[in-house]
Image 1: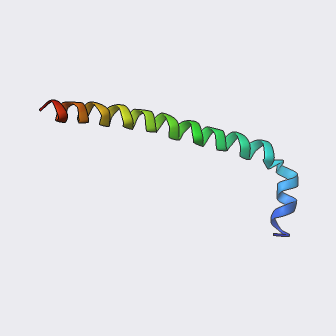
Image 2: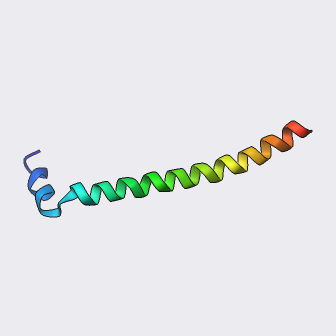
Image 3: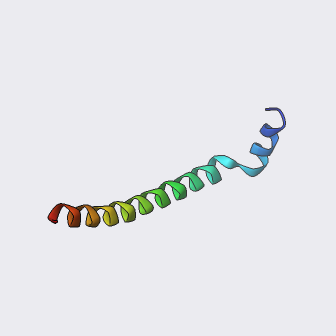
Length: 49
């Protein structure tokens, strides 16, 4: 922990980590929407049959 703390102070990760976290969250949401739409279409086709 003692080695990690000084790096945190230098890089100011509270901002960078926050932005990367939101970027990852956004990417997951986009992928989730795409997968959901694709599977939704497949499920609808299967249900119609």
